[in-house]
Image (cartoon, rainbow, N blue to C red; front, top):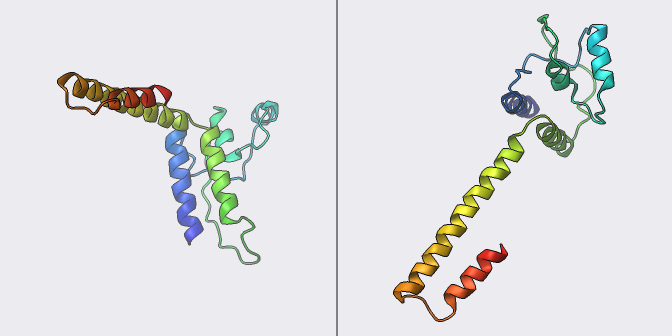
Length: 143
């Protein structure tokens, strides 16, 4: 049950990040020769087949079926392997991680500018300790 919940969450995140709905996708597909050729021509080492097969842009039709519970055997993936798989695929198929880093950098830049301006202002009005403004500005410049 835990894996199903995590799986749904992962597919929701990756669908949102890719702007392609892969919630109905399966690893089982009937592909046209053109689609197969495009997939085989891709240089990916670790292809995320569910996403890549949707991403290549060919017309898609769905055949609905009920997936039966596993009767024999157990899941071969460990939790750590599933987390690595999810992180690899999210970073491979979306610009979300780059955008998160960009927003974080802008937030820290604004924080540094505000802190630097406040330190200079405190120096000008005479409320700072001797050397404090210099230390703060040097630390901000190093960061």
